[in-house]
Length: 237
Image (tube, rainbow, N blue to C red):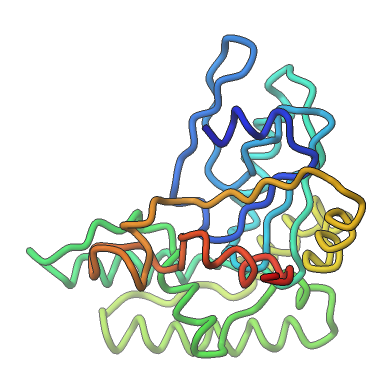
């Protein structure tokens, strides 16, 4: 349904989740699968926004957007909130290690680092898209990699991840999207005041909501409609 409504919307905004939920889009009698790119992407007149409530693996985002651009379809614009949290390779490793450690009590994670990225956000360890161009980003990331390597070693006996490899990966991906980074709340408030048709897109159904779903078999974010204002920065009024 979202892809249908997305074709007539001026703006489509993802307000939660990451690239753990595949969306099948039907357009021009063809089917396309996206995971993090909003579902209005195949309307060239639609602006697609990844909100601050999302967690983003920049390498995967760039790859998916390239796939969309190479589809042969005319596509819309993609924007990303400067407050969206970043997913790093250590998040995926932790995700897989935690799931393995659960044994017969596995919760069905996609092992893409979504949960650990939200864990870091709540713990105030997370880094955001808007942190990347700042002078202290490299130092902050180095501290996080060192911390997570110790955690992986002590808790799961996993080998350390290479900091320079992680840093170079995120910087390479950032170069591809740096001109698409915005203040999501300000952008959307302006669009709404201009009378634009704005569609808010969740990633999962209500029963996967971290608070209101079938806990603990849920996702790591609030995916119900109540999270729209928090996940995008617009007023709830």
